[in-house]
Structure formats: structure tokens, C-alpha cells
Amino acid sequence: MFICKREVDKLNARNVELARQLRDVKQENKELKEIRKTEVRNNTLILKVNTAQSKLINEIEKELSSNAYGNEKAKIDKIKELVHDYQSNKLTQIKNKNFI
Image (cartoon, rainbow, N blue to C red; front, top):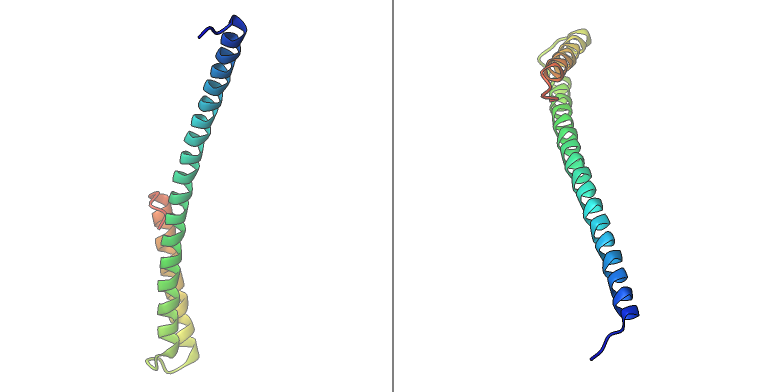
């Protein structure tokens, strides 16, 4: 079978085009992997923050429903203490770059 020069040139051009497309797809894939890695890390951090906040809310609910304190001021003071502890812990972890 005989292939003319024009056909060879056309096939070579197509090979070059496909090689460029492959390179572009590989680059896009690499970028998407980095984006996914970042999103997974962000989701993990958000989950940790949500867990810490849920614990705080549960402690506040526990304090509000308990009858251990005789008046509302004592309950409010205890809630303020819990929130302050949570915020202090959060700031310490941010400073240490553990983020929660």
C-alpha cells in the first residue's frame, strides 16, 4: 500500500494535535487534583469546627436544662464561661496552626 506525502503530513499534523490535547488534558487533570486536595482539606477543617461548635452547643443545652443553679444569672455566667473557654481554645489552636 502506498501512502502519499500529503497523507503522511496530514497524519503527522493529527498526531501533533492529539499530543497537544493530551498535554492539555494532563495539565487540567493535575490542576483538578490540586483543587480536590484543597477542598478535602477545607472540608476536614470545617468538619472539625462544626464538631467543636456542636460540643459547645451540647454543653450549653446541658447547662440550661440542669437544675444545678438556683438562678438565671448563674446559668448565664456558666454559658459565658463555656463560650469563653471555646473561644480561647480556638484562638490557641489557630495560633498553633492546628485550626481546631
